[in-house]
Image 1 (cartoon, rainbow, N blue to C red):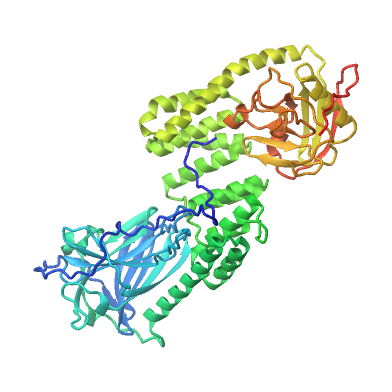
Image 2: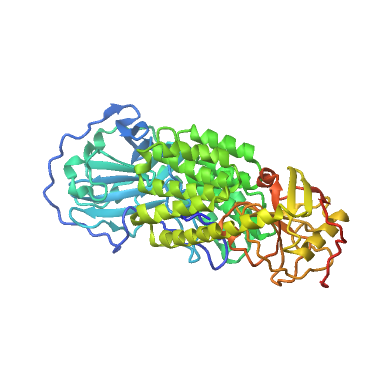
Length: 634
């Protein structure tokens, strides 16, 4: 069990639709279009001058990943701005934000102006009330005042191209007659302007020129770049009016989004899926259709919704291929591969992204990805590889100075100890977190860690008793089940003296070859693998039930116990084997009949996934008596 805040699987239809937090550059306040009184403009400082080229007035900008460019030109009577941005693109990462943005700030007098905010490809999270994501918005600013959102139609159109880990491009077409600021009106357009640019997101933010107040450039007017509209290169006119063309395209996309939302509100999941598939084809450059298709497919797989493709991993792969800087989406993809038992592809994919610009040269991002990956492979039993990752990260004292990384590192160490059935070590890690890291924990984390510590401390006490019971078992002749699976052999020692009738039932069924050819129909990471259902879906039985046998044996990694329904006296043929000393395992003690423990082949158990076969189960080392159980009718 992790204490970290995980990416939640958001419901994509019904009354519980998740609300998208689609923020602007500042929280919107009063809507208006006030023109401020003319103030005496400050004289521009020595700002970048730019280089006049045939394609525009060009500026070189230093970004996190190198050099980008800005170009200003005239085209079709509009101001055209092209930006090549070399910072990590963050398209929202499924975390309910607008993704990366590009903001062009324009002013005539330097103290009052407009932010023209463009979001190239927000990841849209539909809201029940029908809100759409803002691709464009316009915000008025004035020196010494809070910026205010403008309610009218934006004065510009935009388009974005997103293709690389650390690279996105934006083009804006601005009708300067509509940018109503002091010194500029529709009837008297100014020739002299100042501008600044802010680009990026939570993954990285940069303002040009350096030193400009990105929130309110009116506070730093001398930092803005001055240019004359009449001196900008004029490009050949386009056949159609670009501002109208891009606005029309945006309206078409909003219509497609509304069609999706209408299907969601009508609880027509299959119809919604068809709309999304069409939108993926019609708007391949935008991420929203890719992301929502993945979410809906995943929900269909988890809830058994008909009319929707349930193999969601290809949709998730398309999403991260469209925008591979989505760190959390990569983690979801890796977890999905592990859940399906495609460990080879998962390890290859992690190696690829570790060597990609997502992680290369970005120590904290690489550490975050490594910790998430370590936790994922711990949950599926790859403890050797996870131990190596944690050992490497633990040796980097500089990296672990970051509070959140250090806390998550310790949580991963506790998860590793639980997977290795070392409750004592896990409890020690939780104690360390509660003492040395207490001030860095949220109240929710604090409460969760305290609870996790109690689980492990209780397990330490129960383990002392278990060792005594095992010493007694060593002197007995306990029956065994030899389970041949598609992944290898597992040997289980049965606790006949603790659960005699349950053992009789298991042995009886094994002698009749009842289990041969069945599968493991339910396998949950870091919890257990369940099999023995004749129907293969968890609803089958051997035709009878057995009475609940309360005994002294507790749940640990390797415990072999009987599944049942809500009725305690409903044990049949279904059994489960526990993966770890995790809280969800330890919490089962006393509630389910513990019938035995794995004494050979836990490495095989760690490899089990849904659909793996039980080739055969043979009973051996039996005592000299009949194994006919007392049965209850179904």
